[in-house]
Image (tube, rainbow, N blue to C red; front, side, top):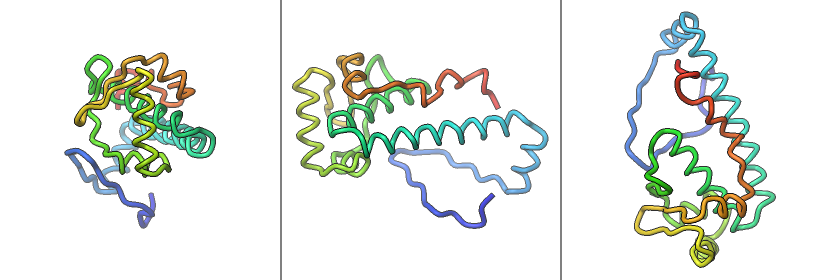
Length: 158
């Protein structure tokens, strides 16, 4: 749709990337309207997530920001089968968490200590375990409705 990207994309873990030529992509969208619907759905969810993160950065304190991030990651990863009970892989370093949440690495470290002390989570190695999900979600003011995860799966199969 755009002649030039205005951003770049990077990954923290291994991914599979498939490049689709624009003409083939347009043909696929014409032949399969469910692909077009899936892309519209993705755009709307992306806009909802963007609104939530504007609120996160401008209206939440450090505890709420980190708690919110951990809740969002849990719900997203659970939606694709990448959680085990209340735990998931956490490849982000404290510096990464600082960058994502608009905090300093020192503030992230202190905030993680507070979350641990409150018995809400543990972070050992590269594995995060949520010990008290209702408590963490309350602290984060987290409502997963903006992720629209109920649409993932068979009803949105493109």
